[in-house]
Image (cartoon, rainbow over all chains, first blue to last red; front, side, top):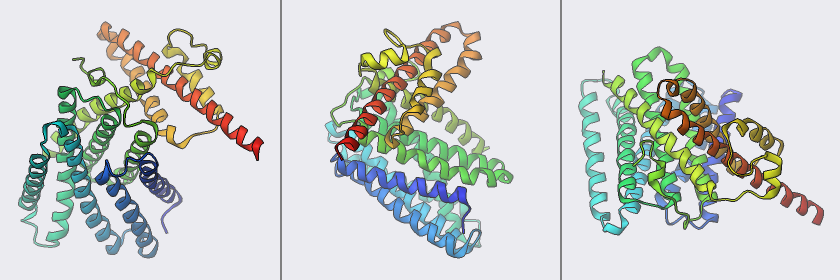
Length: 232
Length: 133
């Protein structure tokens, strides 16, 4: 059985993730941000299955490790696609949906190819190494893409408060995870400290999205230039 | 080497996203006028200052918690701490930062006061519902 702290973090995480879907449904934003909400719904399902496997087989166990890394890769790809839909929202007036989708798929294929190049030397457990590498690389690609999107929001003077908060919170989440992976690669001995932090970081995103859906109406507007760290 | 570059980029991006996210939270609440009651309780009449933040947060903690506000208040609390750190370190070398951090800290206090007002209204609604039942 997982310890009390892990169980509490798990419960809070699942509660917040389900909360995002409920808030979006209540505020009629579910369809507008469909992939974001489907990602959160998928995360709830994955977290519940992870908890079940952890309770039955314990950690470390091959069953839990395999399910954790494979499900993480699928969720990361899902989140990456959700990010692409945020691009579609920001560039909606330019009718650039087709180009954004094509670009996102090309970049995903490029990241997969790069990950393949990195792990092709490892003969044992090739697929597992590839899946882990792909997840880590997608977090960093997601971070860079979110940064580019934030730049586009400032440049295009996008004013939708909810959209801005969704993008910024996603940026914070990707940065936290990318930094976490980088520290674990630099100092493998600290993995036992930094792995539980992933769970803590994971709570931030659903909390921020639930807040954005619940508190901010779709019509809310703000001046994005005021939010930039370096005044424009 | 690659991991070190990713770490540095991530931390720089994290700071930028975090500051912008907190400022977007503040910007969404800054238009909300404070009621006379909350102005009386917090002592904020014209403009809020960073000195009042701890007191307003203490008042916030006296009211029943609202889960949907929690992430915003925690994020602003962390942002306030970050501003305090900048104020006591970098701002001593760059004096223009001192004024900026003070304005930002005041806005954090205003955000907390708006959250307090929402919590008071929420408590009042709950009390009214209990009376009805």
